[in-house]
Length: 311
Ligand SMILES: Nc1ncnc2c1ncn2[C@@H]1O[C@H](COP(=O)(O)OP(=O)(O)OP(=O)(O)O)[C@@H](O)[C@H]1O
Ligand SMILES: [Mg+2]
Image 1 (cartoon, rainbow, N blue to C red):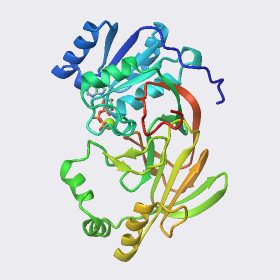
Image 2 (image 1 turned 180 degrees about the vertical axis):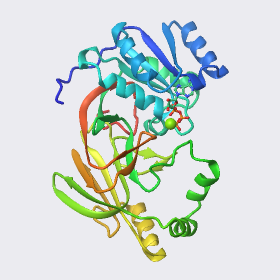
Image 3 (image 1 turned 60 degrees about the horizontal axis):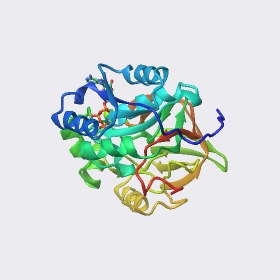
């Protein structure tokens, strides 16, 4: 998976690949109109269903487009990143982001403006920089992969259930009991260690936040070649859960329940398929290897972004 790292190209046309869900939003139309008036050549392509983002990323490359802007939420960004990563690195357009999802965790972590016109300007005008892309099995992620508890909770989860999950320790404990929640017994391997743990939660971060602003990997940088690895062990009492929550606030390198490490890769093995969430999209894997492809993508990240280490 090693690729020669070249500086990012700046010049050329840009496509906005817009999730069809947001295609008719007046603020998006207005933002596109305003950047065109300011002299940008911006063509728009719209997705109709899953898979279109992958195809449109490929078509952009075939058309010689220098930069694609993913207009949508984390799922749209993930799909377009997946499409870009299937291309040879020398024909891979750079990526910009127009955040239009419900959570926009990657955009939020990057510090992108929420207002469509401002975000579109950053996406069009910022010189792209090389950033890492995460791999998990055959899939790609740019932001964060999480597994175990909560991994199946996405924006398609009904709001009352989401509220319950956000409702604090007591209701969480009660709910886990009521559900007879079983931990995922898994074996983790990484360069300096091995853990055989009953997992409550596992997070692998290229970016820093998931689930609508939850900082699971607060020290993450997208250009350091390292994955943040957050391991949260299963707990069986309210007292243990309180300790766990306390540890989650401090993220010790080796707490009783929480470990926070930085690794170039990690392997996971389990007897049961682990529910996972890759950039907001749910999936299952029994065994996987997750790693990073350093500098694989050129990204229009805003100046001074907290996710950049090489300012
Ligand atoms: N025209 C369309 N109408 C409805 N859904 C679409 C359309 N085109 C693509 N999709 C689907 O939209 C999903 C991605 O949505 P996306 O993640 O961008 O928004 P979101 O889920 O609202 O945002 P976030 O993940 O930030 O909360 C994909 O599953 C994709 O299949
Ligand atoms: Mg989504």
